[in-house]
Length: 569
Image 1 (cartoon, rainbow, N blue to C red):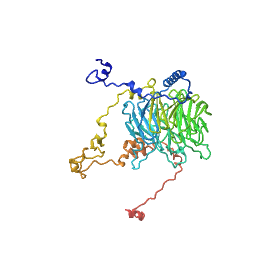
Image 2 (tube, rainbow, N blue to C red; image 1 turned 30 degrees about the vertical axis):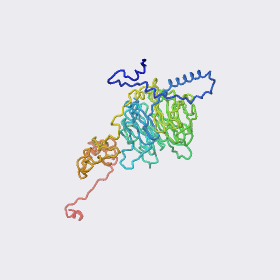
Image 3 (cartoon, rainbow, N blue to C red; image 1 turned 180 degrees about the horizontal axis):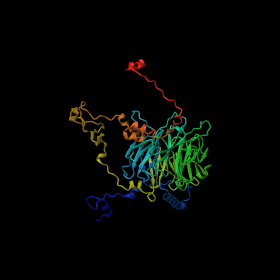
Image 4 (cartoon, rainbow, N blue to C red; image 1 turned 90 degrees about the horizontal axis):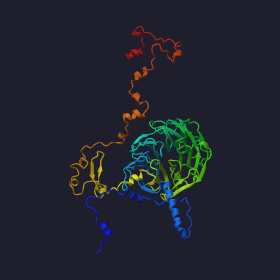
């Protein structure tokens, strides 16, 4: 009788006991491979069968070239939002991913802790959850941007006049002041008086950032001062019927050649493009291009190259234009590209980390990689077909492209040969097995004290199990969280919204100007201005010799005093 050795090896284990749980990393990465479809190259017509083999070889070589040049050969999908993803940012190390959406929330992801089966956000942040009112505000997240020099904090721009600073763990550090909307002169306001649309960090100084708003101003802030900006730049529009004001739609702050010089470039709704020196003076721009894009169109994309010589803009007039900061008058190149800024105002465009390419999304869900010299597409590949691709981010350290789409999907494009960490770290881990605690029917609520709460029934309703002692005697004993079932027993006072918003002494001291005067002795404070012996009075010294002599009436006895004073005595 003949035996099939191969079949026997497949069915009979080679060893017994605990098996090695190592993961096949190559297989997991290979499952994430995507088919490279370059739609920028026209498809060749059908040719005879004799040339089929040679054509296949050519197409394979072309696809290999695209894989080796751009990190788009593999993809990893992160689906944590329900609505359109409007912004994506990562810290300089590439371990913390923050996404913002039209659902008014921020999702924080720790890329170093995720596994292939647990790709989810570890925290959801609502920038307006600190509002004490029941009808709390909710606004679209316009932009979230990490500082390029400090990964411990990131800026959040929402559809409000106030920028907010958050820590990398999602805790709000500062909320910058809102200006007085009833002041006509914008130079006298302490903050934006209308919605902020965009922000950018200083390329060298980690303590400064700039914001652009719909109040026709650009404001430079110090991170540590939230009560007033450092500089206000008012852009005066020359469009007919604008009354000298317009809306600033996008802003970028980049390097300017050699040294520690920088440049600020901002786009406006009237189609103009304005450039200022990053260190001042701000009363007069270095260059202004009127009609850079069509009037009354939203220029949503703006970026500056790493060397500070080129500026790329994506306008609402369905064009992409390249500008030279040294000859800031006319575009170097122009190409047509359908705009999505009328529906998604944060549709961006970005230079590659080495400025050798330009990436942007499209309304069809394709990723476009352009040549900055000619603005011709080098690669056009579908990411979310049928759903507009809104925001893109090419991380310099990871060498991976992060995209956000209108269907709420975040896609990580990478290449195992070119990329490092990020998605590769996730795929290098073994899939997490489903634990008993992952079943929501067997979990318990957690109260603020950290104690176990009431059990949850299989139907999803909290409370004691039917037929138990607790259900028959609802006012006897304690709940699972340690609280008394008797409603007459005292409970821990609840924290009211007023108590949450009561400022502490440290908050008053750090955020309210001249608050230290409360601890001063008023008498000592006034005596600081008293004249010392032999010191001349600077303010009223000119009238010392011309002052008349004060004469008071002298009373010889109490009888001569007026009746009014006698009555008081």
